Length: 141
Image (cartoon, rainbow, N blue to C red; front, side, top):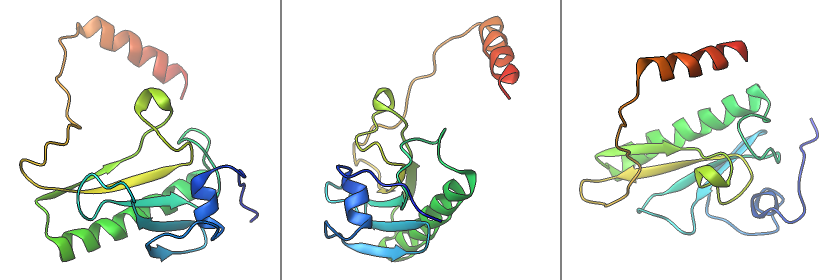
């Protein structure tokens, strides 16, 4: 399969070998490497080799391969770095905080007191509001 690429995409350049990385593993569909701006020691990325910006446009089998690579890295992080936990984070679009528009999953080791803020405060919502959104989503499936 020919993988799509974008000339000015930093991850496409890493996949092509134009930019060096601390590569952890690579297969036909994915590459994993250390994040060069880590939020915690051991922060790594599992990246699709082809250029698909977000989860809604990537082929399902490639998304599955990226998830499998993320799991392999997370297992190594847990075994070798022994954090208290690991976050897998995948953002889609600037509104979600995606800084590189090329599908990737962050593997982030976590420790108590690391001050990373991925949690949110639940808001009170009426059941009718949830049901209305549910109807809209069900209609799209």
